[in-house]
Image 1 (cartoon, rainbow over the protein chains, first blue to last red):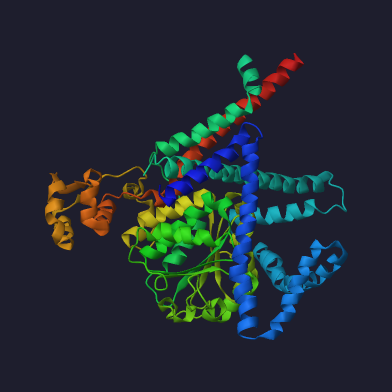
Image 2: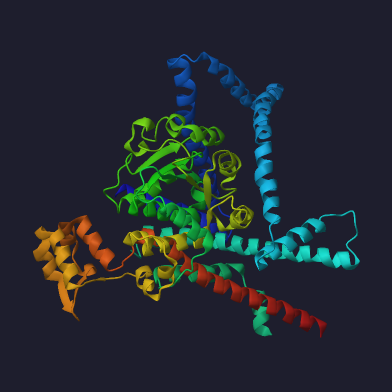
Amino acid sequence: MTFELISNLVGAFFTLCIFSFLYKDNPLYQMAEQLLVGLSVGYSLVLTYHRVFIPYVYQPIMIRHQFVLIIPFLIGVLYLTRLIPKYSWLSRYPIAFSVMGVGSSFALSLHTAILVQMRQAMVPLETINLTLIFVGTLTVLLYFFFSKAHTGTYGKFVNVGKWYMMIGFGASFGLTVMARVSLLIGRIQFLVIDVMGLMK
Amino acid sequence: MKFFKRMQELDRRWIYMIIALAIIIPLVIPFDSDNLTTPPTENLYQMIDSFAGREDRAILMSFAHDASTMPELFPMEVAILRHCFERNIKVFTFSNSALGAPIIDYAINTVKDEYPHIESGVHYCNFGFKPNLFAMVIGMGDNIATTMNVDAEGRKVETLPIMRGITNYTEMNLVVEFSGSVAGGTWIVYARPKFGLNVAVGVTAVMAADQYPYLQSGQLIGMLSGLKGAAEYEKMVDIFAKNNQSFSREKLNDPSVREMIRITTQQVASFSPDEFAKFLDKYPQHQGLLEQYKVDRDGKVEINWTQIPPEHAEQLGFFAMDELQRQANHIKYAFKTARVGMNAQSVAHIVMILFIVVGNLGYFAQKLSEKK
């Protein structure tokens, strides 16, 4: 048996285990599910040790004697105190450093997610698409302005925003269905083409 | 009325069964269909293609996903890698997720099987798993070689031939991030405003709707959304890159391209006498063998490559067989996965729409009978 055949058979077995949930919950499904979680964690742990701990901690400190790196290393280790309830408060220190990262990205995020989007909403209404985007932006924003009752002409106007959102949710739902079917297609392609070799 | 009542009470497992059949049958019995290309895919294709043959240009592919989203994202990655290998475009790959690293190897090996002349470190470079995306994104804006330091094979990046003419984002001017969640976020926030890097994404269909504002505002230069995006890209690679041509809208809309994008097995390589003479000149040692399988038809020379037995195929070698398959416009399965998948997707959608229509009719019929 070649390695490829063995790996395909193992993959096929666990794929069928997962699919068996469609009939009803069963021990084979649970075994496959738990194995997936365990494997992912185990694999990530080993890879993190070899690709992160060794080149970024062990080698600089032990081989190149960059002892200053011991400080961030120890701060990082404080994350592990989450496992000891009595000292779990110490894990807030590395979290504080992470939050600093969030703060540093604030200005650029503001530029990307708000300023550029606003600029693009303030262009001359030369095409139907741009007009639709303008009307949509305005009505959806007004829909979430709750200090004024949605009644009368104003209510009808903001109701357009609701329709915009409904269309958006419909598009998202359609794309979600497409994505889920794609996942099923991927698994069935694996079973009928890679494992059973029904098509070249 | 009885039919609708029975449909309303149908066990969900029958529905699963019907959907499964709607997917399996088009996969096993493929049919030729077309996927109309959309501007987000075309823009990305043209941007990548503009780097063809240039020593001072490269793209970076960021594999920010694990195996759970592979059915949608993997065909995109294979299609883009194939585009790069066909058009001699330098490509770098990396992943900030430990579980994304093996997918890079899998994608490269899938494509490399068909391009034996492609070399690691010369035509492409895999940086492998690199933690701390933020530091990488900022660092590469200054110097790629010092930021990445070593590639996945442990070689010093600065010593690799691929790095000739490549220093930072000025040269590696496009990043394509593949993700099952928020794609391209870090690149758009940090690398685009600061370094002017072009960013594109390949996302699962679920996430596509969230990415459109960035596309519309020009922060993303292109986007591949789900299996459909992958199928569109595969099609363009078959029409243009495979024939070493640049993108052209006229050609894309020309009915003659239908022959190039057939996803069913294409068996006959058809040559004009001149083309066949040139083909024989390339492989003089196999002239006898090729003459054995040729058939003259309507002034053309034809060879059915599927009729060449494995031992003779092995004798002819990879390059001669590959050329025969190219001449026949045959597409290998790995390079049409998304399009075969889209066939199944179309059939499944029709079945689902029927279920929705029947379900709704049944609901209203039930309401009507309750009123009576």
